[in-house]
Image (tube, rainbow, N blue to C red; front, side):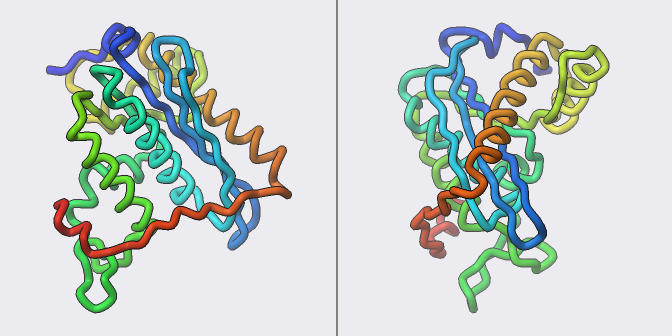
Length: 222
């Protein structure tokens, strides 16, 4: 039985990375800003924020996790434990479970899910999965966690956050409410910063150019 306590995450040997994203605009013309921050106890040691055009909520969220994985790779030899948090259940489940059910179509070389639908944002998922694969070679113990978004410090809101965390991460044991307060505060920090940056730069966005080339080499990782 896994018990989630604040002390397991709030210590000098543990790096916690929080990612989130914000978008605005009209259908077919969304702008976004995604971000990731690396935190040890109560101090931000590194952070990434980036503007992106022609996006969707899920597209920006998985890019935020990709940014978090990039930070994790940067510090993978410096901390015993690295935790990556996101309030996007679609993105977390995509990397932890869904991706193993996706199949490469021999005709177009693209990924399709079990219902034979083209997987959205697959290039970013593939690259993120590869980064996660590289992290498994590092001495750090890497974990991906889903958390509830927009949780304030009110008691009922914290209880909601604990229930979401328990269900989405299959936690059977107890969850320290101070842990929920801790991760919620940092999630809100990234969310607020990404919204603020997006508002300031909506007319001066930087297109997201990743240079990623999707290939069937991905199949060898499954």
